[in-house]
Length: 399
Image 1 (tube, one colour):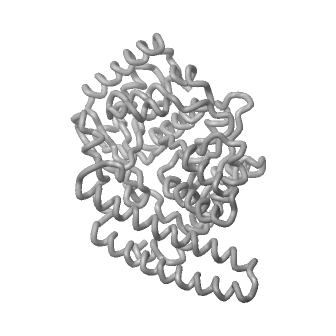
Image 2: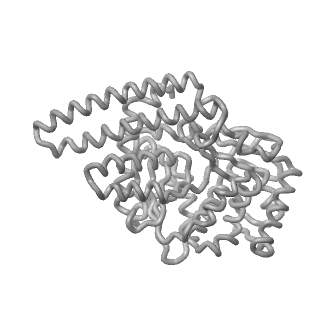
Image 3: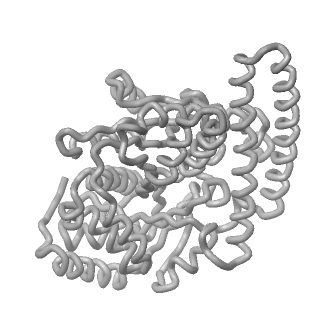
């Protein structure tokens, strides 16, 4: 699909409408929820859109001020990116992308479940410990690891995810629900691409089981224009460490394992690439905000008097003109900056403490870092010592 078609007026407007619908669903559940869990990069711009929707609505409805604050303060990103690609030379011993993808999603589901437990129990969970170790000891992002450690026990949460075929979300929910402690509650908002036409069996039926039980709400959209298109569109980047995963599995006798982190390039200093990706993402956010305002005004116009309707129609015309300008700006910047063909920005800052054997990206712009056999083994053994220091001897766990 060409960039003009992807960023068409119709797609942008419907993306804004979708963000408004997500905001309404959050409003329905936020009073009983502790957190909004964000397991996919694709949900990052959507939650930003939902927060902006709540902000605009709060000017006319005070209850949305609380929704806005809830989104701002209680969103919890939990990296489940599993777009795994393995070069041929690494495919020894039955390693293949299909298995690695499934393992990573299962691991991510177990990791989410740990946040429904108290901090002491979570601290010595093998799943949380692996995630914390990668942040602390490999990427040296100790402040971020500490924030995750301090997350208060969740009793009830909203899970916001994007859906294409349904495979990823159905795998997550299939492994998450059996591991939730008794009495804990979860409701899922699933933003479905191409008005749900890309859902495939058996995942579609599995998701509908949750829907019929009132555990899941679908929000259809024309196109999830940001999905799997890298930091410029998502505002977030993913790093996957495949050979570290394999070494931890081998030495700790634990399965499944996932070694995935996220970082926000626009929060980093520096390079021309970071600046360009930040500029493009900011432009995309501005276009989405225009689309959100247009949809909200269209919803409002039905309740107005005839005289007020005329004023509203003029306002919508002005907003559509602004959107057209934003759209042209986006397309121009995408071509000028070569956003879709430029490597993920800011990686050198995140990986400045290690010397990987190989770094490459998947077609979904997920960065893969192969540490090399000796380095991966050294880190895996260090992880076992790290765990023993904090929690005692590691207990073998295979699921």
